[in-house]
Image (cartoon, rainbow, N blue to C red; front, side, top):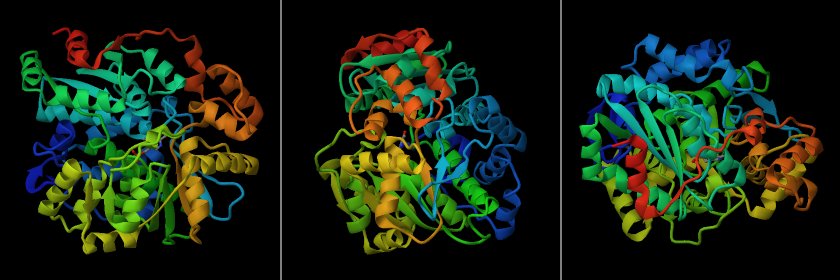
Length: 494
Ligand SMILES: *Cc1c(COP(=O)(O)O)cnc(C)c1O
């Protein structure tokens, strides 16, 4: 199987090249030239398997230039038992207080957010792919993060041979817990730097360094090359397809669905990566009916999916579900490409309009495809808080992002058995969750708050977070945005 670009459909690259490069030269995103199909028998055969075995089967359909041994090695390394707090890796549990709601827990990995599902696997895929595509080069990963991605990438890449990783975060733009997670990061090939600016400054700074000729040449002289760990890399999307296939199998195995019965899926959405993975699972033949796109107050996607007009010219809100505070959802480009019947010229036009005017309207054809597959809704801050409280009263403790999805599920309603993606541990956002549960903000520091949350909810604090308190702080530097390039050179020693 080969991959083409959303902005040049004549391109033909292997999955190794797509994963190593991250983004296509003309700025498009890599997509599979054909979405592989699972027959009923194929799906039936997945049901008795473990998560890892299911993952190997699904990945083999997409990564056809990887050998079976390579896929084995990647999956076994990524989803080692010790790294996830459930041997099921991504279990499905019932949502109490509902007839048909089920929670797909994607936050049981080392950093307690769903990004681990992909970022534990990506370093293995990337180093395996680059061995073939760019042998002997050291891979340098630069990340700009608003919190979750940076930590998950650090944890995934730490001490991976032939890689270096450097993460920039906005000094005042991440939660106390997220900051401490990054400042205490272990590993010999990692570095973390705060910047005096917001997330957009960090992101544009990284992009600039990434595409700067002089920097690229200097890296090449030292036998190094950049690659990307952000969510447009195909190597981050494909591991996410696995858990929707796996969730269907678990739903059948647990007696929630008869084999062949369709389920709905609800996803708390930001960059449109997670929900796009569910779309791929549906297109592969997994019996999925509707995909619910759940947004917070930054509801650009709710408007787009209901009207067909994407308009980023609106107020940006800082919410209690920060990982969804996004106005440009990069992975949407892939969906538009598929729904336009791969009309790369049309996609170039939309993306051009997005960068010049911040706005575009899609064709009737694309709109018909959207209506067939998606519904959309959003949650206000008040609704999110109320949902955490009522869900807790019913017997489940959800984080702020997951609650956005539960609220949209409750509001839009469906008769189908429904899987709701839970994307973070409530212990990652202890202040917001505890405030919602208690009805008022407690006057405690971050760690006392997690202990209080554990006491009030009768749930156990996520282990990787509990350990943070005693870990050594290693990275405290704060840099001017204009000095980011120097940080990169310093870290690489070039
Ligand atoms: C990244 C993230 C999201 C959004 O996922 P996308 O793939 O960007 O749509 C939702 N919840 C949490 C906790 C996240 O970290």
